[in-house]
Image (cartoon, rainbow, N blue to C red; front, top):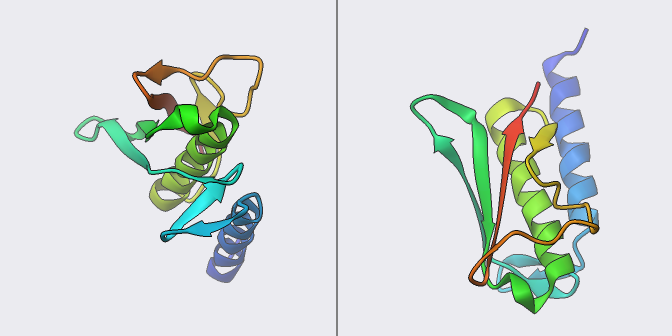
Length: 116
């Protein structure tokens, strides 16, 4: 049985692990591959469900590797905050380096669904 304290400790451990992948902080933003990125996540249709979301990472061409990491981190943060779980069914997994970063001009755009 998972208690409230166990849940909190699990979430803190996951967040700590995610931040460990960041190289530092610049202008209040974590850096990924040495580059700070502005990233946002939002529900595709919040009237229908919060589970289906998009993540955007601005100025992704500065470091495609960093943009991937920033997108993954932002999606994980979104799902933990909204569902208490870091599990995501990505449309295109940002950690899969064999797949091109989906760009809309200079913005990386990823979609996913938070799963329990």
